[in-house]
Length: 252
Length: 276
Ligand SMILES: Nc1ncnc2c1ncn2[C@@H]1O[C@H](COP(=O)(O)OP(=O)(O)O)[C@@H](O)[C@H]1O
Ligand SMILES: [Mg+2]
Image 1 (cartoon, rainbow over the protein chains, first blue to last red):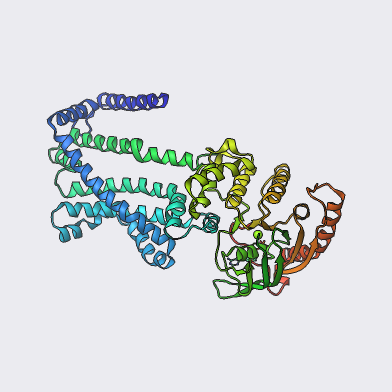
Image 2: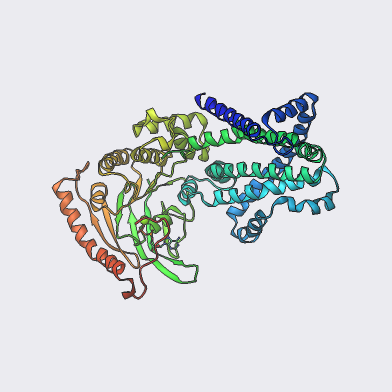
């Protein structure tokens, strides 16, 4: 609780500094609006329902896209970690693709899927997929050989070996990939929504830009940061913390 | 309990560059049912390799290994293995770790609970059922590993330097535990160590390996009453004799480590993360 208070105090301090900075230095609001302007915009758009709707649209895309990349990425990563022939072929390809921001796929995605939800989902899936696959592959490959030998001695094989030994042993590493994948999915989604306007927070930000309303642009940024932070605190980050302490990875 | 029959076993590994290196040559060793045989030898003499072959985790290049008259081709529930590191599963509690092999064997639920709890009591860890492996000391972890290896009531227990990483006091208390549990369950034991005194304290017989390639050099019979005291005079006399027999072998390894170029084959490359 004390930590939470400190965090809140820190954020409050930042906002105050922001306000004093923009006010004291006389920065015009069309260059860099102060917290009051941004707060006003946020409030107005929350009340009118614009922002909640935008968040809803973005979140839906994010969950579907991210969910798909988890469903595909983990099995693919396991296969890559266990089958050497896949590792040097598909694995190399995936490492290469990881360097490519997934938004680069948007033109092709628009061509293949048209101006549809699928196009943007495609970009989101590719954004998260690579880091989930590589982290899973790595986690599976680095399971201690003796852990596997002990498991085999106890008679673990086939599906049992996967479900009861390999997956739990690799779980902390996979989780790191899931966290990273979440961040990349977010980025891909925002890039997609900015370029290809069809609802969502990206569009909200885009509208701000078109109206030269920097308060709205900053409001959108604040909303994105808040959502990302909330998801980490309430979900992935929390699971990761529990897993790390259970697995005994946090000592020393 | 089942006997182990190792008959003219050889093992060679082929390196990624296609080079063939002989690690074990023509090993023959018969272990009687319920007998405790220790293997000592310099590092790299193939002791772990031999244990892996008996475990069924790897296959011999030639020769045969039979447990209870049945040729070993894969791991089986009548054989269990204890490694230098405890290899407990960190995501399971102590009790769940001990239950694990029973669950894989399909033992009825009620019986699993009873046997796992009983076994933990035998290694004096009843109070730590819900602890996680990382919360235990090294010695306690090896006790859990021992419980996990014995809970299935194996015919054959294979131990690869199980106490090498422990401090002297903890190791001594593990020796007492192992002797007690072995007398209670009487599995046939193959116990690898590089600690000669440990071998004399625990074994009915002590087999000595020579190296490059690994061969069985000699087998000593330890005809001393149990439980044995490591400071006992007879234990020390026998340990001294075995040490002298090992000395030449250890010098061979040392000479190679000092000057690897002098030898034709050279010292085998150290495996990453491998122990001595
Ligand atoms: N899987 C393997 N592939 C190639 N070489 C191996 C393998 N396992 C062991 N060796 C080699 O075999 C030799 C004997 O190893 P090991 O049985 O571990 O010896 P010890 O247990 O007596 O120290 C070593 O030189 C080691 O490098
Ligand atoms: Mg060894």
